Image (cartoon, rainbow, N blue to C red; front, side, top):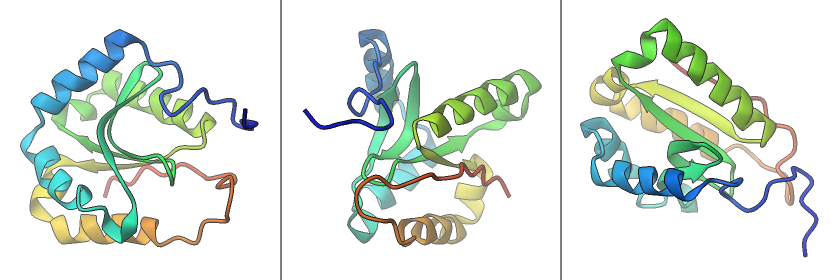
Length: 144
């Protein structure tokens, strides 16, 4: 068995069957902006495979590239509410402990500035990552 320096049990970090069921439900009811971004991510930009509505621990990531440990989130208006902002920050902090970088965009950004969003994602995909463990990655919360 391979040594796991981040102590991650697989790519789902102990997600329960309930979280997997929720992820499947979310895949069946993607938002307009999630569908739009998925049209780009499903073609494996720069050779990187993304998964949509990926379960990890108690969370479901909108889009996830396991090879890069990169999560991309598309936030609706409710993410601007104080309580949801606190939950999002807690989730971001948890993902950081797993070595997962999180990029966050608002629905409006995807709808109104799609090419910029793709450029930001492509810039992240083209970052030179050392072989083996990706090393310490600082979490980003891009919300322009």
